[in-house]
Image 1 (cartoon, rainbow, N blue to C red):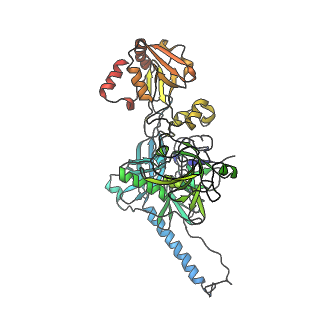
Image 2 (spheres, rainbow, N blue to C red; image 1 turned 90 degrees about the horizontal axis):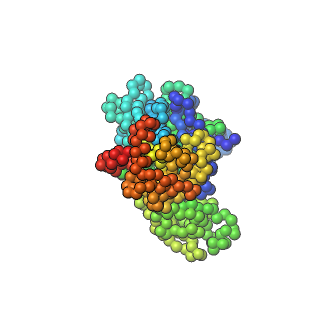
Length: 567
């Protein structure tokens, strides 16, 4: 059975079920259109074992090293191992005064009933202190939070924390604590570098199985772009064989006396396969918050690309023998690359780095990673040099990069869903969390047409949303239309709908006797406008719904009053 990735947070309530979805494409440029396979965010914490970093090397006593017998250097070897052990313990002592336990109370929205939340739940995770009195943890530890507390090692007191910034794509968050008492005796950790394969790391945190801090050790197994469960994005991650369990989320992975990464997910169904967020991703997140005061996201070219490993494919696109690259299949209409790149272009190099036929670029000592990593590490509005083969001729382009949003959002944390109710018709923008309400097997149980378009369709203009008729709250005014739910709303009185706010304005600004909605599959709804306005009020009262419109759709107080009067 295929194993699944899980993010790690300890829940006092039952764990969410795994969500299944189709695998991502072979190559993409972070379009965020495809959800990860068998994904689900959840919180908890792990049990830990040994705390030693060092590894012991077996040597042949008859070999020599620069003419010196290895038997003669046994004392030096013992001293080196002793030093490594001492250094490891010193690093852990440093971590004990830097790692904190995080207690979160959260409440997620109900996307089928967007005017109300689900019952609150309590969860626990880990975090650690960086210079500047900042606490780093995972975004899924504080997602949809209503209250956050932190407790330092050896203290019975919990302190209130505020969430300063959250990056759900990279699964990172920054917390601050105002209490001066909390910071007494606290140390900060320094960020290190990406560890090499087989380098030893120790994961520190508060996993399940106990209440006190715990430490596990392991080695680096792999470094490559990986699917981030929480944000459903593809970013660099480090695979380690240390035990990472629910509750370890947000805890540091320490190498030497510095942080090598942040624990955030594991591979369920496998033995001791865990993942940590590497330092380059952490620094990208932190620099964005420092420069802009908030999380700014990771850049994308907005491309869907295909490997060119087939000889006939390369010959068809006039690639010479020495050329390598990837084929552009699709370009996001909102990306800056749209002005320069076209379908069927061959991308030969990015920022002077040649791209192989399988879409990878060189990385460190004979390792390779997908060129998406080079794109994602760019800052917003930073430029990149792209070399392209088009019709057998090479072209060089300078493309400005920026984060891109999909037509159907992959996640919708820390904010209430948008909705608009008129005559009992509940209109909402389609999101993947809405589809997740259909259960753990949402890919197969949700409406097929909505699911396919959510995963594949690109926006055609800025601010565009995929607006659907979510459900019909029954009343005399809408009798006979109850089977038209879960369809896209395309037009209102002949005007194309751009987004939910646009639909709200079209309905509230209607000056005709009849109001017509054109839906997907050529379905039509027609209402007497004045009767429908009167019916809205009694329907809201019957279903105990406080407002016909979500707060984010209200431009100003005057508009709010106008809508309330209309209802």
